[in-house]
Length: 132
Ligand code: FES
Image (cartoon, rainbow, N blue to C red):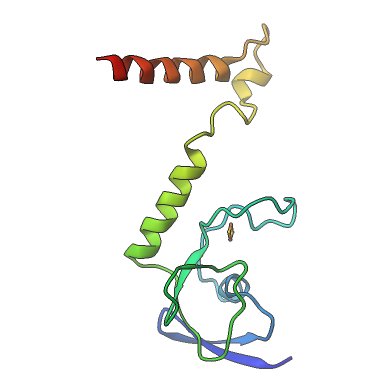
């Protein structure tokens, strides 16, 4: 397997051909947040939390699917990246209510859909906000 030299946050690292940026980062204890990169999950869609900046590449790239190349200069943490990760997380959470089963629902003796009530209250609150 061929060794590949890359810079991550201006520090030299040796990677292996075929390795992704995320794999190399994890091996070297460089934190890149992830949500969907888990072998227990079925491939469905990308969370875009693992984005990184690559020198010479216009758009941010997902580190979990981008393979390292010799001489690559990668940045894992700056304002642009933070802003993008926040936007991705906001989007993921924008319609996330009541689709995980909360402990209050699983242990409710009456079997009340507490999450559903809270979601409806939140929606109704938004409705009232728009009318005033
Ligand atoms: S971890 Fe979700 S897109 Fe990379």
